Length: 129
Image (tube, rainbow, N blue to C red; front, side, top):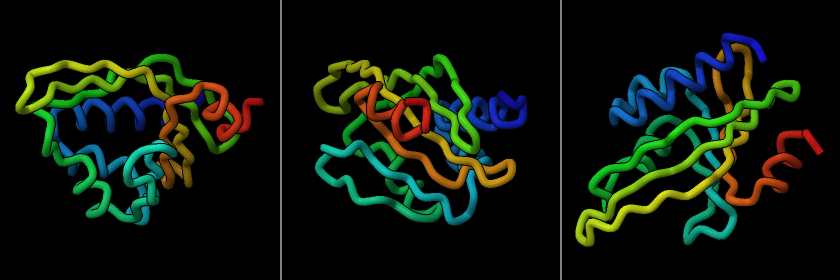
């Protein structure tokens, strides 16, 4: 894996965890496409920094963060194994969910992020299977 891609993903996640969305988006193309998990209530792709920023803004969560695990590169794509962690604003219930992000790069910037809960689907989308 190229160090540039690893560092871009790490910086973006670290910034997201600080809720520094400008710094997180700096690692992404201005026309970034974010594809939420297939079965989520709104799984329509989001395009551009403003749409992604609105998606990230916590509304029902007291906090949210991403723990980065293994990264696997395949061509222009990187499969990131992550754990999403949140705490409900009203309930105080904490949730941790294993998930997968397929990040597609255009040069040194992420141009597309597709989210998955199923590892096999994520690996397939990354071109690993």
